[in-house]
Image (cartoon, rainbow, N blue to C red; front, side, top):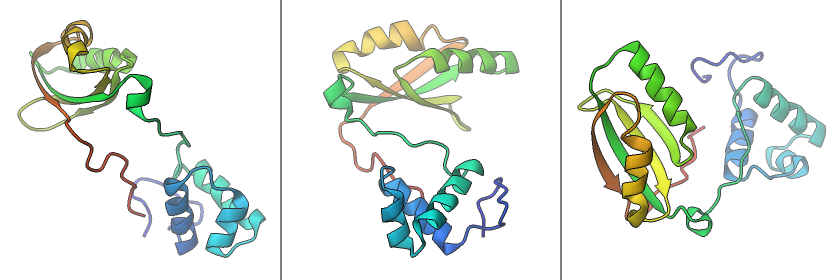
Length: 162
């Protein structure tokens, strides 16, 4: 049972691959020796498996997770964006502009009562009006927005089930 849309040279992921993926999601700084001991492989075998998981696109990056409050981005907002009209060139221009906005963490095109859901981090709610005026409202085709400020993180760094 593999991951849909991803071709693996060995076919489906086996239990060792899945264990490696779980362990690396929990802590991407685990050493090859630690991984090997936890999954019952030699260090060389564990290293080769991890390299293959990267090569085949199962692992796309290894990053540090920062505390947003400590770096001045303590407020999380979600913004529903409705465009004035939907056309491929508007979607393209909107996407290009969002990618350039450093405060925007994620942006998803959605189906429903609006077109995009934007997840952004700002310093604090006092800075929100500036962010909305400077970043969101000038985006191509923006007709209407609705903002929701997060007042607490319930599950901020969920791991993918493997």
